[in-house]
Length: 254
Ligand code: APR
View 1 (cartoon, helix red, strand yellow):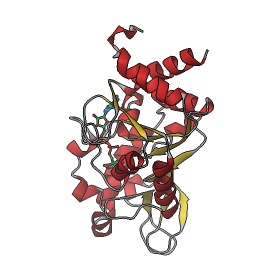
View 2: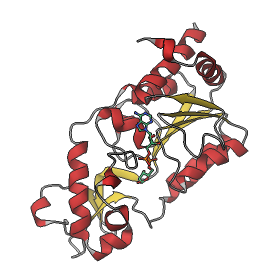
View 3: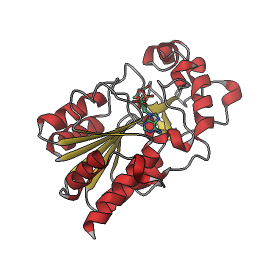
View 4: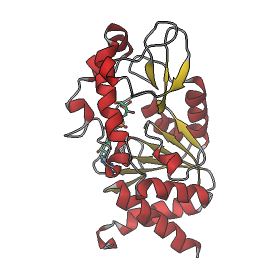
């Protein structure tokens, strides 16, 4: 790969920060999975350009018309079929193996961090593997077989819901509290592929900054974080910037 296009000063600063810590964490958004073939939400061809989130991704929308929400979910599930981690996911798993990153907090529901080998992954918005009944809280494996019938039903008569956090739902207690604790206590935070627009996930880099962390942001474009909390901005595709960052950390460790 032609590494001349990387900003040496930024990448070397990021490599030094990571090399000198065993207390780093990563926070990821949909942008890290775009190179695996999963569209993000707010870029030009993102999911929300085809589905208005207020009609398809809120708890009220689900309660009002579960079949409609499942129509979008079935399309999303199709894009998740057979997807594989890309080099950005593997790079974060490598940083965990090297001891520099101790957890990945992801807003994504695609399970690609675990499939890439990351051991400590906090799924802040749930995952696509299970579905839950809001009426009786029963959970079972995701079932796409009934798509012709619309929303899957629960034994209690209620409608099953994908076990992901919809707008208007609270973040699961474990994910919320553990992520806040990790953010407040880390020395280095790598933020990858998120538009910094959805709370409370977007509050985590601010907590890290308040705790004195060095914030490294990897994105194809600047975000609200960039001028507020980011110390080192690595512009580019995560599938290129993160492997380059790992290469420079490894080089220095030789
Ligand atoms: N490499 C790096 N960054 C990328 C790439 C890439 N290949 N492709 C896109 N991006 C960046 C975009 O510039 C954008 O800043 O990733 C970000 C994706 O932003 P969103 O689509 O808003 O996704 P995300 O931030 O994860 O959304 C947060 O909102 O819709 C809800 O619950 C959903 O978890 C999601 C949350």
